[in-house]
Length: 301
Image (cartoon, rainbow, N blue to C red):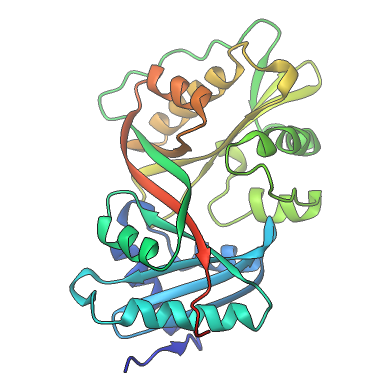
């Protein structure tokens, strides 16, 4: 019988996070990011076992599905702890009348994927990681298309409404996000632009005169001081195909190099061919990412 308890304080949450960071070292975060994530949820709980943990949340973008990150340390697998954690989060979700779970699985973790498939889950998205090594890279000059200016949000804080307008067009076009609910401006600003990993000077904006036509931002964490993670790159539909996304990416590469970062990382849905082509052209290399699976609650929840 496995002892699992609801995290009662940040000490418990730090223990849960340590397990997560061991399983997901390339996505490691700090408690600052955990707090930001929690503040952006409709409901949240974190459960801790002796060698595993499970965070479960209802997200604003898709509140009818439970989002679960379930981790068990490799040496402790096959002893029922994963199943017990699955049952625990299922009971929590069932009390909220949620009937489906969505969860990430490391793309190169066949054992975890097999666990999910055995319990009736199916793959719904696959996000391939792409990495750019900056150490020996000489950044290309940032040369935006004619009539386009690149600025940072820090330089132009008045542009935030225009950035939101781009997000409203771009986010629904990301494969896998078609059915996500767009946040209100206030929620988007607080949760997507002012979280612990967000910086105004690391958010780049493409302008055509006074109109914001595109933006690109990083998500940064002290847990990975040598890596800057691409968050969102979006261009208004009418302005796509003109090289704006490429100019924004080059601005990000130059900024990250100047800031002393050693690598850039992103995860693109494999169906998002335009951004994957752009990244490959800029020198990014593929690496294992994550699979998003969706499936039922445990039958005995």
